[in-house]
Amino acid sequence: MKKTKLLLAPLLIVMGLNAKPTETTQVQKTDIETSNVKTGTTIGHYQKPGAPIDMTYKSTTVNAGEPSDINISLSTTVKSGSMSVTITLDDELKEEDSVSKEITFELSPEQKSYPINLRVSAEKDGLYYIRLLTKIDKIQSSKLRAFAVPVYVGANPQPKSKGLHIMKAKSGENLSVSQAVETIEVINQ
Image 1 (cartoon, rainbow, N blue to C red):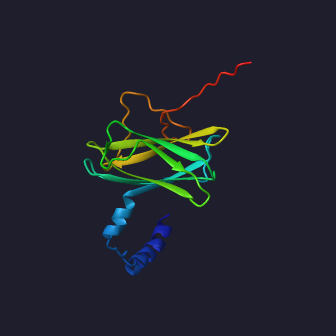
Image 2 (cartoon, rainbow, N blue to C red; image 1 turned 90 degrees about the vertical axis):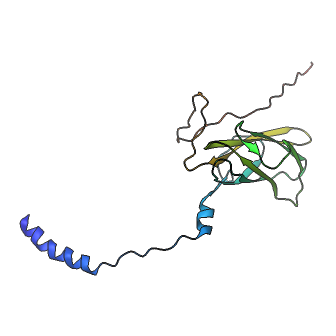
Image 3 (cartoon, rainbow, N blue to C red; image 1 turned 30 degrees about the horizontal axis):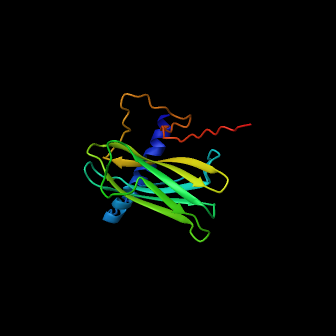
């Protein structure tokens, strides 16, 4: 054991003398700004049977009291009919720009994405959600799909539990409860 230490010591000293110090680079403001933008998409992920709608979002992380830009883009493979979107904000979120809570898009083969741009703020740090309930109306039927877009406020945002138990999926992802629409049709015989 002593022989090994005696043989390795000179080798480590020589390697230490030849070691080059690591270089530091200056972080530019644009790098910091882009790291504050969170993105997400449902494209290519498993979805329950429902409306053939996918969503992509960009959410800017901000400090309490500052407005956050939320850019949502909806896409669908349906070429005709209409897509209606109901927008619901968490109670603690405040709209900076007025956007209709009910939006309807006329679907066409030429248009691939349907944008929704919001500016919201919150007075306290936390993780908040904008919920979308989307519905595609076709001649014979309607299909629904729900989405939740996160809004990050503060350095280490945590979800507001309001004393409720937050459920988690097996993967560790938080599950949120969203508004749903149910229709019951009585068939006379």
